[in-house]
Length: 478
Image (cartoon, rainbow, N blue to C red; front, side, top):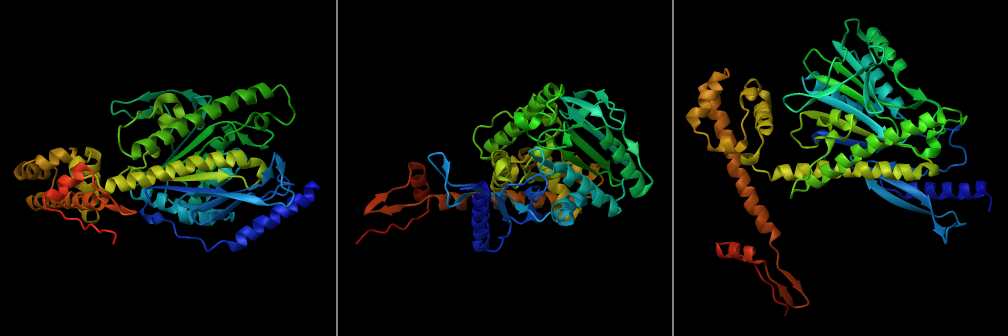
């Protein structure tokens, strides 16, 4: 069977699959409740680039389906049948509308930053999937919306080295500060007062210095990871991150197979290594979010992971609100890279969900100092936000602290005795409520299964619980 005929059969099966799909389900949990949002963006087919390839990706709300032709004994089935593998993120889109992407997934991050917080929008995926287009479009829309920006800094990570894109590409060092945070020494910050036109010019200057090259996959392939950070009057900041695309050897080599081929391969190895380090950090974040023995996350393996560390914090109390935009190409040729990208995107979603669930049952008495301060800052709609910085103590210390000592701390920070009493009471109410929920959860986990007339009795620790006053109903088979 000719390739064109088989291609048409594959397209027909994909259309049939889409016609039978139910309406797009809602994201669960709702996007508004998420501190870290993971979204798949599938670019449209490009007539001049994707000839002879059927649409191998379908998006439907949070669900993404990857289609592959059925093979038998290594031969493609001549009926054109397809298998479809499902992935589930927080949301997905393939309509190509930049404004919708901004409104749904970037605007909430902008609002976090304008309120004085930290925001991050990060694009990743294979080369040629549209990451740079998305990041540039999101920044352009933000500029046109008239957001006030007081300063800008831009840099790239190339071959594990930081280069200042607003200072002729000067190489800079990354040092770890006293608080354990990694900082770029000497990074230039350009003040902006001229609105959209000036900001666009500054960012354009940085983009012109970013390393790009022609490869088999992309005429303008990014050879570095680019960071664009905007500082706002509120004290907040917003960073757009355009990661270089993951590549294979065939894609990395330039069209002409010239003397630049060795350089492209060297870049490919460094890009893939740093992305591999990022994926390992994501994997271990998922492992740790499930509880149990905590494993060390190797953020220091590369400059990229060191500088993205705070953005990878998926806990509900994270200081950073992040949108991860996973980019995939729609073609059959791209399926191995598409599946790889979606696998790691799913892991990030799983880590986010696991962290949310763990937080529900993590009593306030186990909160870290950062979590206590965050809770005080958000209490009653931010009424006590000015006192948050003085609350640098763990939940355990807070729980055991005498009321009078706590009130002294609040008054020293500019609050009143009434404020101290109220915050103290609210915290201890949370502790009591948390303990009550834990007891209920333990009871729900204790089950007695009836299987073919045999009773599976509770474990010893559950039996002790029953002896302490709890009861269970046993049903005998008649």
